Amino acid sequence: MTATVTTDPGVDKSTRGTSRGSGDARRKLPRIPDRIRRGGLPYLLLLPAVLLELLIHLIPMIVGIVMSFRQLTQFFISNWGAAPWTGLDNYRIAVDVDAPIGEALLHSFFVTCVFTFFAVGLSWLLGVAAAIMLQENFRGRGVLRAVFLVPYALPVYAAVITWAFMFQRDNGLINHVLHDQLGLTDQPSFWLIGDNSIYALIIVSVWKGWPFAFLMLMAALQNIPRELYEAASIDGAGIWQQIRKITMPSLRPVNQVLVLVLFLWTFNDFNTPYVLFGKSAPENADLISIHIYQSSFVTWNFGTGSAMSVLLLLFLLVVTAVYLFFTSRGRKGARA
Amino acid sequence: MAAPQSFLWARRVILTLLAGFVLLPVYVMVSSSLKPLQDVSGKFQWIPDELTVQPYFDIWETVPLAKYFVNSLIVAGAATVFSVIIAVFSAYAVSRYNFRGKRVFTVTVLSTQMFPGILFLLPLFLIFVNIGNSTGLALYGSRGGLILTYLTFSLPFSIWMLIGYFDSIPRDLDEAAMVDGCGPVRALFRVVVPAAVPGIVAVSVYAFMTAWGEVMFASVMTNDATRTLAVGLQGYATQNDVYWNQVMAASLVVSVPVVAGFLLLQRYLVAGLTAGAVK
Image (cartoon, rainbow over all chains, first blue to last red; front, side):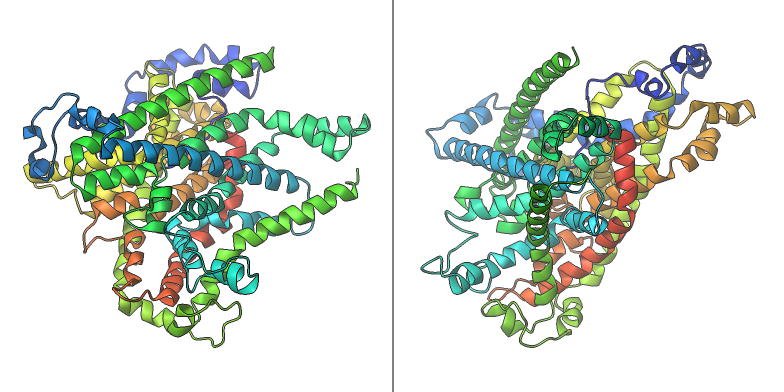
């Protein structure tokens, strides 16, 4: 999925236009009514977007929820309305941790949490470090900026398939370096099956994800007024202190949204593991998206797959709501 | 104020490590694409023993890469054009008008970002199959279905970014155009769009990259005739051997258009983000 960065998802956009010239809010008010008088136009302008959102996102979501209450197997694909209602059975199957399906789902959920924690943390860390180090102008800054954005620009499958090649046991670069050149391992390790697969996945995910954090933070850094730094250096603050006292606090609003976006993105990531491991991921790197995909398209059990999707969505909604509640409270505190 | 040595050294170390991390796969991609098959099948070589450009000719034979390329171009190109036009209309409405449901619209569009793709994949697949069965509209397996799907993926970000951009364009400009007798839509195209070119370029790049790189929907929603690069690139693995040199060559070939475009236009993207999204 894609990502959107906002500094405040709850902001009322009707006030955004006025934020640039503070004095023109009152001047604009009398003008708004004559725009309103063309009542239908804004709706007409929004119509294509609304129709598409309905077709691709909202209706499928409702269908998905309906499907999760039915016994939907391959026999009902072309006529899913005829699939028998099963009530909450699919959910029972999905959360019954004593049976194989529920147990595997719980394990996959756990793996995804661990993976997301490390992948997001590291991506954010590298993004902040790079953005701060490239804030000042120096020779080669422009080149580095472009270089750092390469992983973001490369198509996922091209980049990840290269990593898959590097992680090959017999002819990959990683084992060549670790085993042949440094002698750190007794024998060439497997990276894409077995226990190491989670490390491979985190490395690839961070490589792919940190440039996005870097891009957002770099843009945000350009909005910090230079006077702040000048005033601080006149007061005798060194560069490390300026980073701690000015840069990091100024980045807080962007960071709050960025971490949320990275979290949602990483948690739902399908492309990276799919290209890295193929249709069935190793148990230790069995991310939830792949797990649901497999439960649906490989074993043709769409009903249970839908129930899993709905549970995942509920989890993400709760996490996001809690997160926004706490960060917006923190933000109000910061403003006061 | 001159930065202290500690900072300069930290900067050198951090940036060098990051550049190495970023460029390592790029080096592997480029160097391996120039090796003969026996060299990529054996132990990895930092410096290729022998160089060949043969993989670059073979990639088109091993799989119908040209066909995938055309499919990807059509799908990503069309998705970009439609997505940007629709985003411009929506952003203009939100930026310039007050109407009921404005917040509901923006919040809904933005919140679709957080839903797992897997959640839409199954129902959308079923909806497309069913629409096809009942109306004869070939959405499933067709480029049209993929275009429709992809353009909604980039829509939220594009709308968001353009709202920020349009907001930074003084209203007096389009007001004046309307006083001169333009309709609101003409004012949009004559005044607002030209002023927002950097933002529009930025979201176009973004929309294209999104569609060019998507894997999940492409793997389910395409068939032999409409397969895109995202799926087609996995065709270099045969039962007993993976043509890694060809895989790398093909990866490089499919990356060049987007990476070149992105690096040329990244300044617009950063400027657009600075003006709109991260404000």
